[in-house]
Image (cartoon, rainbow, N blue to C red):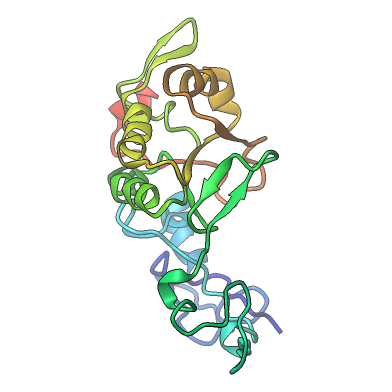
Length: 240
C-alpha cells in the first residue's frame, strides 16, 4: 500500500492514461507510442524541465500525500468550569485577553507575538515577486519571516569584489521591507547555503543590516531537485 502518488501530480500537470501500478506509478499497461501524460513520459520528451511545478514562476506547490490521519481526527476538549491562565471571570476571560506571545533563542531575546514562522522565501521568481506581502505581514504580526538561500547569488545587480558580496540590492530590499514595519516583536532569519558562505553573504547581512538570526545549510544533496533553477534566457545563464 502506498500513500504517495508517484509519476503524476497536479503540480507538474501530469496524469496516468489508465490506473497506475501502486509502487512505480507507471500505467499498468504502458502503451508503445503514448505521448506521455505522466512524468516518465513527459521527462522522456522534455528532460529535467518536467521536475518543475507548472506554470514555472507563478505557483507554489504542496504535496498530494493523503495519509489516513489528519487534524480533523483530533478534538480539543474544553471545560465548562474554571479557567487556565486567567482569572475565572467572564469579564476578563475574553478572546482579546488571550496571550499567544512567546520568546525563543538561548537567552529568550527574540520576542514573538505568535509562535510561528514562515517557510523560507528564497531566490526563486515566485519568492521574489511575493516577498513584500510576506515580510510586511510577518512584521506587523510579530512573527518570523525567513529569507531563503542564494538570494545574493541570484541577484542580477549583485556587485562583488575579490569573490565577496559588496552590494546586493535584492537582499537589501528583502531586509529593509521587513525593518520598515518591524515593531520589536518577530524577526527576520537569513538562510545561508554553501554558495552564500563562499560569497560572504553572511558577513554582508550582519555588517550592513545587523541581522541577528541566521540559518546555516550544509548542502543541496538532500533536495529532490538538487537546488537547480530554471532561467528565462541564455544571457541570464551566462551571467550566472
